Length: 194
Image (cartoon, rainbow, N blue to C red; front, side):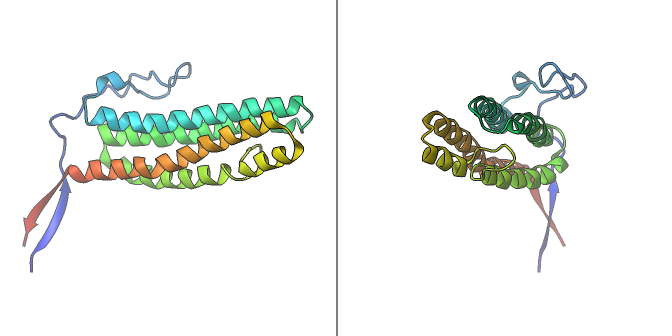
């Protein structure tokens, strides 16, 4: 009976050379290195997909904060504003870390991708949950239904937009994980070993 051993190939010929110590991202705080122009395909298209996943959460949490300000302005509890700020800092930080782990894992060290896939899966489940619930400042579909019962059409629209942002992030999660997994699988060489 033959046994097979998989070994990850060191560095593909088209893998980018990146200066990881040139901290230029995100704007203003600059704690990571990220520059799409340094990448060639297939890295560029895959990293762009991971980046879109991050931007979707960033935009949705910003919408959550705007929605919280509007709700406080029309008489709902003002604590939602604090929740909105906390959601931006906590969940954007989490999604930024997940994105960067995937980006660096693809371009430099594939051992980072195991935890990238696990963390992105957990985050995806979280995005599904917050697209539904009405708790801790999240305005899911449940809150949209509540606003509909109250006759507040503008708040219904904002809550649905926020919920759809998180729902799209949930849908994009398995796409990103699958593409990263198949990309890594393409870099595995099967060697025959007795």
